[in-house]
Image (cartoon, rainbow, N blue to C red; front, top):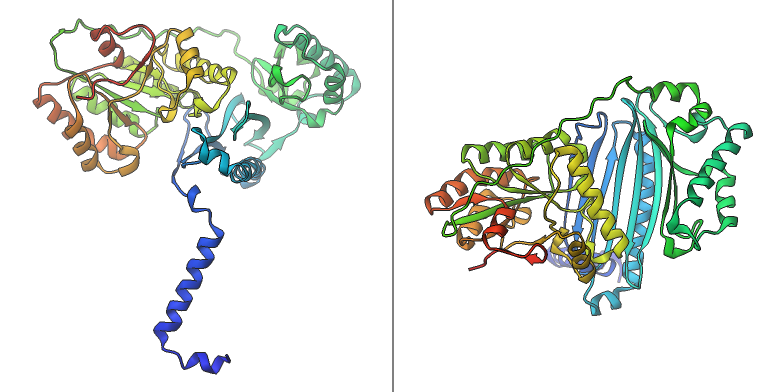
Length: 478
């Protein structure tokens, strides 16, 4: 058929062929079973000026992912970090596709979690420690560590040669300190491979390191220097021990005040006595604290004299300590929502414990309040999660009313769902990272008050229901 023949066809026929061709191209090149809900949000952590935090989450039938990326306004600093993350994500998705039949037939999903923990060297210099964990099936997941140290003032990546004197007179004692610290780790006994350690320490330019006012830290991936059962290895050298090895410029960055006063403890709120026959409901807010939305929600709760429970991420509490502290000071309860929003059911026991413990530590440091309960991200749990929570005597808290605020992002829809499903003893799931949630609260609280409800924390609700110290709780559904 020649082009002149095509021109004789009606235009609507040509248009149909064109649209069909586009549809075929898209459908043949796209794996539709992997399409799902995802969200990206960027915030500016008050504790780390010059850094923005880009948080991306995605949930599909086959996998979940949660990726947090600190970014700056300087593109040449962002580029190597983004490239490393893109490589991790690309490798993960290739494994998901390769394991599709297994994932579709088994009752689990693959998971990728990437978090970046900033460590302050000075007001303009940070070390960013990226930890990636992926699970796509089998007995164990795969973990990887990557570090970047950025100098915002000079707009450059800081190399180890900018920090440590690289002559053998400096490197020899540093290697000795590292080996000494590793040799003292009981958990590495019988697992360490001395030849691999020597090989890893041979080339300092390949080291994965971080710097803070307290420690110089070296990171080794799983299998890098020890058997897989030992996991990843982290070695901390007190900064005082390596001061003679530091470059003068870095020593100036690390100057500490002569006197460090202890931070004041924030007293945990005292729970008022409850009426056993009272009409109570527990409002909960996940994924914060958020620099803009959480303060809005706190103001609304204060106007209604309402107490709530905020299930915070350890990483977010570390980024916004002033807001975390405000939540505690205003009498609300703070719960543990993991450190980085990882799917705990996809992790091994060691990683689950690390997510819970790091979150509790960061929340306590930021707010002064130690979390009393845990809410697993996505509501995902298995026997390992229950076991570790039970060993810590920490209840696992889910919900009986899901506001779906994360999905609708609409104040009226949020109000309608909660009003239709709330009953005395309910635990209501919301998020203090979405502005429509704050917009829904005034009318919602007015309605619930008119219905005779009082707003209490999750721990108060558990005590009223005489629940056990450990276990999994949803709140009343009807």
